[in-house]
Amino acid sequence: MAGGVREYDMTTRAASSGRTRERILRAAAERFAGAHYDDVTLAGVADAAGVTVQTVFNHFGSKEGLLTASIAHFAGEVADLRGNVAPGDVDGAVDALMRNYEVLGDGNWRAIADADRQAALRPLLEGARAQHRAWLEQVFGPHLPGGGTARAGVVDALYAATDVGSWKLLRRDLGRSESETRAVLHRLVTAVLEGSAR
Image (tube, rainbow, N blue to C red):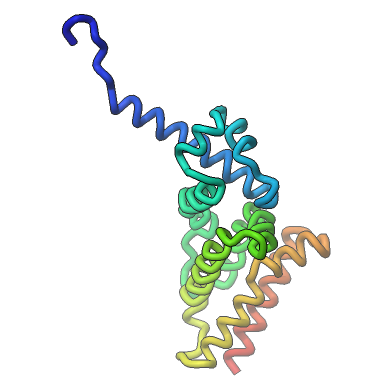
């Protein structure tokens, strides 16, 4: 520009802001996955992201806003952990659950434990439960009864067999290995499906 005044480049600023936001979201995801909600601080997230608390606040408004944005931002990565399981593929479904729970199971369990004290977590967990149920219906659809209460009952049983709580019981409480846990989950799913075929 004339007179030596530098032209303000909004594109550069937007790109920089996007990179900052991504760093904050990654730091938040790591913190929320590794600790209870009450133990995560904006200061800790800011420090890990290399920004100030004010910058975190400017982007997300609050800790609840940061949590919600973090979950929404990484929803695609969560879906990628489960991959594309062909309908009816029991082995593929159990493998997908194990991939998902080995990465996110502890964080999911902490969120469930924190939901009684943190209202912001409740709608997120309700959404996750609905998504899991829909996934079960899709993946196990070829094995399910035609409809009505029989179908709903089988999906309920599959949900109980594949819930993160089942994984947590086996892996964390009982100390089973990943392969042992996979075998038990597979056995539970198979038993539910065989029982529904009678």
